[in-house]
Image (tube, rainbow, N blue to C red; front, top):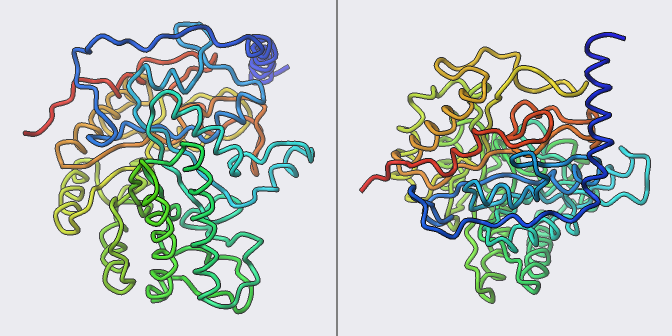
Length: 407
């Protein structure tokens, strides 16, 4: 047996034993009530966010979370260590999940029922929620913006606008009736060129802004935004609307185009993905100047809605990791200390530049028997806030660091 095979066997043995722990209720884990020595942000002041979209699926497939070696609720772990917002993604009808598991009884993870469960867990702890609506049955990102199967035969722009409005309105109305209205809603995910514009059937409306279809794209985005506003009128929560683009180099251009050519102005937050190991055009040192310019020129809040950095280049399973093969940023080695320093500096730079939040993407995607379209386990376990035994690592406490707040 090879060294890696031995390591994999031990991990799987650990996971099988850990499942026994999961059957027990979470031990009481009080959130400190005493006034902290540091400034604890509210989500309105500065969102210290964590995307926990995978947690329900991970827990269903053997993943166990620990703090100080005791089994804990991962949502509460994040709250205790300073998080004030949870981000969750919503797919339209992710039936492919059952195909991945070859099990027609599987929950549709990141479908509405699963999202309701996650929002309930977050709201029960007083955490704000960012609902990231992908308008797709699976991942939507710069390279994939495939319409839901239910909409793929649409040929009228007006029908597509109505579909986006009615779907968004229905989802939020259901949440609002249950006291689960999100504090923030993203109309699309990493819409660098547009929504629902890849793998489309002949006649499907063209929403490709990169092909000068800004007007069509803008009209569909405005339909989603209007649905948020219409539900929020009857909610105690006055939900903020975010638009989301990947890579800082694209952000100013995109928002300039969508505002002018697309006539989209009724949004609250400029959201961006910023993974400095991938997004290298705007340097880490120059990033704060971009945040300030975006805030001043568009008069909107600016947030990083996705970021991450690895704490090791090692692995815990056979699913290839997305981070670790790149050279680290200067001054930020792939260590727990390096990850922590990166996050503290990123948050401080964003705060100083006038930004409104940083959301870490999938800090709880630890290795388990979770299956997705590409593998089993995690391609992110070396960039989480947990070690390979599922125990919290110190870098999680960047969320309650004593940041300097501009006056």
